[in-house]
Image (cartoon, rainbow, N blue to C red; front, side, top):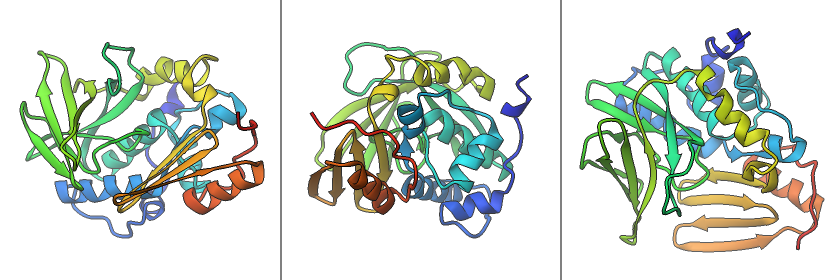
Length: 270
């Protein structure tokens, strides 16, 4: 019944090419950081499958590979971090998925609704993420109490909450600090995310069913589509563009995210 949740990446070289990497390297920290950054810059965080079609999201490795690699689409955390975990394993990394609580903008502990990646290397244990639609480290973050990992002009701070949970905070280039998430390092299997994934994709009240979201990291910032508003951050400059028609939306998805044929739902701007 759950066999499809397990398996290897059908074509590792094609997956690497999808993110702009054309050479396999030793499974070390430098290659891990290269993969993370390349993935974030090439594969968008997006919920169009849930938002447009209101249908369950498959976590089967073959289905995720077909969507992300063959059909040139993106996905959300249960998809992207799940698929990347398997890629890392197939490349020789000691990688596993982990459960995450997102805390950014909250003053309470909400339910687990995020999936991260834990990678163990000779240098230590690291947290990785390519499936968060907000500020995320563009490289692996060392899990040591009090450690600070610098990543593309930002600092990510790790603190140990108790015997089980770790907390990650971010300090941006302006010196502003905010708590991002909490997670623990116990390895989780694909099957362990079925209920969390269903809550995000099947629940009519879930944000992914009600808000269109597409996000992509760029070398100097990010591109973010939320409902009918496109925000481009490039260095210290921010521009906002309002989208007024389905045709404009399709053009934005094509031009900025390399996504075609996925904008089937249109809600008139308020």
